[in-house]
Image 1: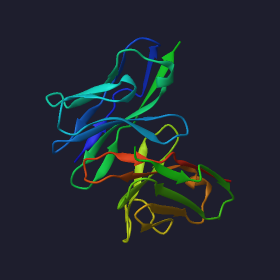
Image 2: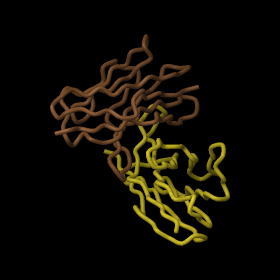
Image 3: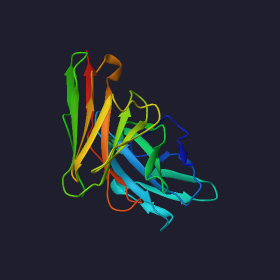
Length: 113
Length: 116
């Protein structure tokens, strides 16, 4: 079975400081992992994906994530937060067997001026 | 990039009416589309997987007679909430996948459904 756990429901950072959003996964297979961002009353936008190629994945808007198999983690980072980064972020694992997405519970990122 | 268009974006209607939500893949073909429901401050819950030309596959606990799904073409899936009641008020989001199973899903902007 596949699942993801997002360890923090809320993260608050100051503008210009680093961002770390944590995600741990559980998968019976080599997983495909994704990070999506959701702005209020909007659908989801893909930030980046990991599909068994390079373990350090670079995404849009300066975000990146590192796949660590030994830690079963796929944390999302950004060196310097911008006000426009304030949103909710979802870590997602894809099931190869059933072509389903399993969503984490989400982390709401607040960026203070 | 791939675009999924969802319509309408917001619906307010009386209890007992039926509401149809459309999900279109604008620049790619989608043999499979997915319907999610999102309650306030919660994550997305998969309701059903919509397969072009065949019956949808519903997740456990989702009433198929309540949430009718039609996927008549490779670019259009519809979700009809029949005889809607206030407890059906929610944010409904569709997505479509490209190609093989390890590709990301592309999401519509969602439909906010409010039943009075």
